[in-house]
Image (cartoon, rainbow, N blue to C red; front, side, top):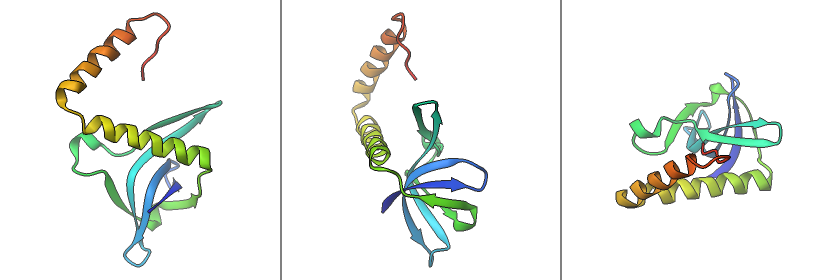
Length: 116
């Protein structure tokens, strides 16, 4: 699998690990994330409704793809680092996640700190 930027026909831009399947008629997207550039800020967010589904991949028809692009090294490394961090959190003990939630809640109460 390789990381690719995918522009869908509906205008969404996604970065994902991709694999062409079914004789190239479909693409399996693993860890797909929508992204948006706002001025000089890069915003990544889940594209799939992970809390209500099993797994972290989806198969789409190539007909839904407007074009694909190769991400530059900085973007690819940022994406892969983000996925790695998400996987670390998902595999943690639930009690550790509760502690993390408390820390984030405390940080949100500090003036000038914004948690997204």
